[in-house]
Length: 122
Ligand code: SF4
Ligand code: SF4
Image (cartoon, rainbow, N blue to C red; front, side, top):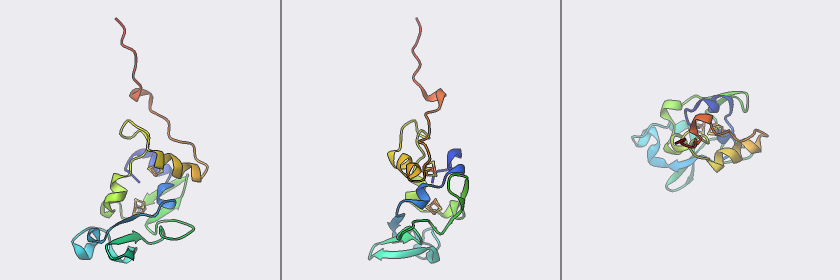
């Protein structure tokens, strides 16, 4: 989940994908992610608890998907969470954002009007 405002009414990606990352991002290894919120999935990687099983839902997500959600470790979240962008937040579609939303019956985010390439008049 990025910090774009549409995410506050969504949370689909946190309830759809396995959120895995290098174990070195855990607090005990000098990172930020609390160790008690992850599960080891192989010798070098961990996953947020709840995202490595079905139904998928990160243990750090609160609220209702599609209505109002919040990450309880927002400032400590992993790189994979920080780097996951909502569609159009960087001026382009994120197909994974769209796919996560679709899994919950939510439409893809629409391109903001101010991002459209307007024709230049002479
Ligand atoms: S699926 Fe997209 S809009 Fe929804 S929380 Fe994730 S990044 Fe934000
Ligand atoms: S740590 Fe936060 S941003 Fe990352 S998947 Fe969990 S709830 Fe979403």
